[in-house]
Image 1 (cartoon, rainbow, N blue to C red):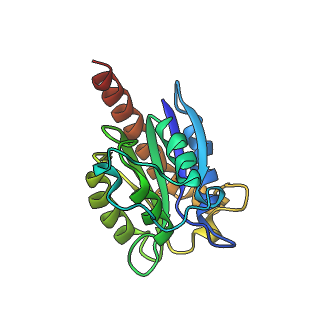
Image 2 (cartoon, rainbow, N blue to C red):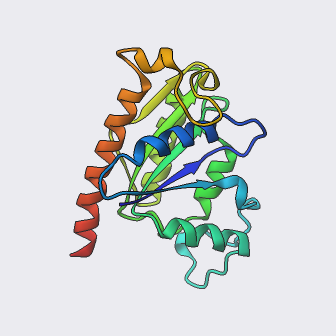
Length: 194
C-alpha cells in the first residue's frame, strides 16, 4: 500500500504537521506499506481557478501548482487526511485542495484523523460527504484527538507519556484506524486490478 498522509493545515505553528508525523510513524509499522507525508504548505495552491468542476472538464488544464499536487496524489493507494477543526468544520485550505481533485481518489480509501476541542468530530462529519463526492470511500473508523493536540504530541510527532500509558490512548485508536485502512486498501486495490 502506498499511503499518503495529507496535512490539512498551512497555518504557522500548526499542530496538524506534528499529528501527521505521529500518524506516519505508526503507519510505518503496517506490513507492505510505504508512507509519505504530503504537506499542502509545499504546493501553494491558489483558490480553485478553473472554469468548471474538474470532474466535468474533459479539456482540463490545471495551473502548474495544482498539476504538481494532482500528480502526487495520483500516486497513492490510500490516504489519511489529518485535519484540524476550524469553526466547526475542516480548514479552507483542505477544502480548496480537495476541490482540485478530479479522479485521483476514485475507488480508494481515505481515513480521517482529526484534532480540536471536540476531537474534530464536526470536521470529520463534513469531510465524509465531500469525499463521497470525489468517489472515494472513507473508512468507518476515524481517530479523534480531543482537546489540545499540541500538548499531546511534540514537534517530532511523539505522543507524550501520559497519553501513551492511558488505556484509552489515542495510539490505540490510531492503530485501529490504520489496520482498517490497510484492509480496505488491499481489498479495493484488488478490485481495481480486476
